[in-house]
Length: 454
Image (cartoon, rainbow, N blue to C red; front, side):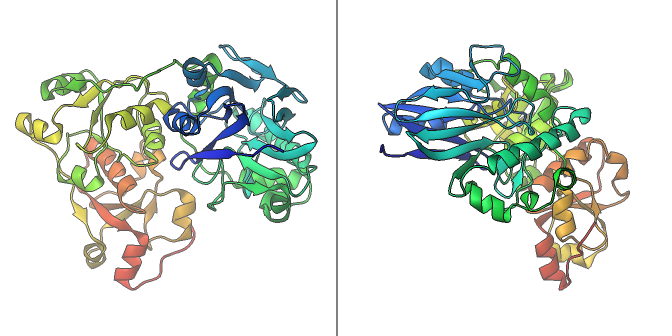
């Protein structure tokens, strides 16, 4: 028996796991890589491995795939579902197909549902089943959503997902389950922190496996779905045709203040990646606040127009390569550049704007309207009494629902609230403040319980 070495490379922001598997002979297999392959390549190099295979379970909607990057950089053979043939070189896999990896055998298992072409992969070592990579099919405590293809396919795919999970339940209880999507992914409704499981654990505890029959499963699955970023509806087509190969890190060309002003006059968007407090103290008028943190790519894709140039404003301690790769994950291949010298340079050329912050104790003392921009599920779990809920991702469409008059914008910690406030400011609102902290901070200062429910 060979030594089993499986390394998950987790993207906490997108909520996904890429898997690096040592298949022996100095070679590795990588499953469901994102476009930023720096970390998975570093993990392979640290172990003296070359990446021989880059594998996909399905056409991803939440990120640009990295299989082409690995094929170019490492000479990896791409394995992908045969259904929905890719616009680039890939070995098509269908149900029952196997690949001899030397120490291991890789077997495709058709598990449609999250997408029509979805495959899981069984990993065998001789006669022993080592585990199953389930991608966006069976996940820890849930299953992949089925509403990312088209509205008319949502229910049929949910029914397919039911049968796929039943098929996976035929595996032994001890079988390890290695999903791609997990907590933090908009492809999943999972709330816990666990990213791997076993068939037996899911059989016993997964709520979707406790319901009786296909109809009940469909109702439970569809009832668990929240909103998702609209960029999910365009990335699948890019992954299908084949994303551009970026190779070395994409760059952020330096732009002086006059060049930024000219680009803005021509329709460019400014995205400010600095911490929320820095944005509040001074920013380019009309800029979007999107703090560089694990979920940066999600909010960039959700709130920014992919058809307009993007100019970045960052802090000196923020790595421009990290910003560029995060943008590339969601299809922003080429950013217009960054403001050279940051806000200090802008302040010399033009007056910055500011957004006032408010602490919970000040908010309790007054009675402004409260706009809570968290997801509906977060809001219903506990919110300031009387607060209005408009999810940040829906704010551009639901601007007319924002309360008139002075308003305090809040979220969980302040970053999403600052993003929302920057959108409101751009729309002409001058009576907006941002709460530092969240609902728990308000409850502690107010000495009141949070309101539960919608």
